[in-house]
Length: 424
Image (cartoon, rainbow, N blue to C red; front, top):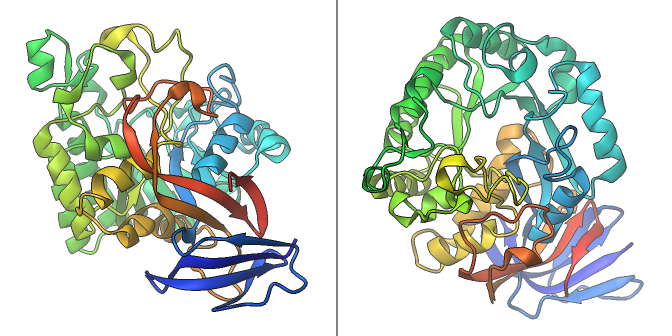
């Protein structure tokens, strides 16, 4: 299909410029003002107000297949991503079987090939069984089949194992995307060890359980030269450690999530939809994360989209499963709370959600220019809507943003020139 988008505020060379864009044979054929619609199959008018940007990439999602399809499926999760403006989702290996071998990975990729409506790029595990202990996997056999390696949900517990993993990944030029958590420091906690925790007699997760392992890993990455990406950072210490490592030239990047940038532990309610790992931290931690976004210490905003069944999320803070959904709210939450309030620019948000994820993980797209793949989304940045989880496409319903009034809606998602979602 030949597609012409007219009168769009288009993200070109890191800024927004009014432009028409002609898409042909899956690529951006031409950009300019007043491109003729002759011989075009379809014309979409952006009305001088919609933003045309590189489609989002989420480098941290849980789509639950194989093994847990009652929570989410590749089909439902990828459809939720398409609705939200995502071109690609990088899926974490909390699966059964865990993708710790070519054989086990194939179980997942066969479902992806059959059901995905956008690009689904799986992570392989770091350790066998994704246990964070024991043995590392055969990285070489998996290297060309995965976007990177992660034991997400489990921290690699020993220095020796992580050193082995980083040494192997450095040889292969592959990235390790690490969930950082010291098991011995958890002590049965399930929310942040802070003011709310003490006021309501809960068991807390200390900040050290996260940042101690990040500190270790940055040193190992410096030693091995491995490309090292830190998942869902949530503490002020984590930001400082990564900032200092970057200043030393360590090949480290990191992500945080929308909820950590817009909420703190004092926003908690006695409801499982507020329970995730890492937990919502203090106001000081939240501000440190925002500062890390502004100064470039934090490279990416990822959702950590983690759907569970209604029953698993109905047991309060103490006993509900860890994880909240986030694909369908991510852009609007960040646009409303960070862009509309003047904390960051819309250009910065595009960098965090579209450009840097592609650069770090080697995913095509990220630029709107002639000859580039037409991997795009069209955003109405001013559309107001209220978060009603029963309207989600994802099978998950647990979100801390329920009933929030937000601004920003995706209207059109294009993947290699094909429309995979539209509401325009």
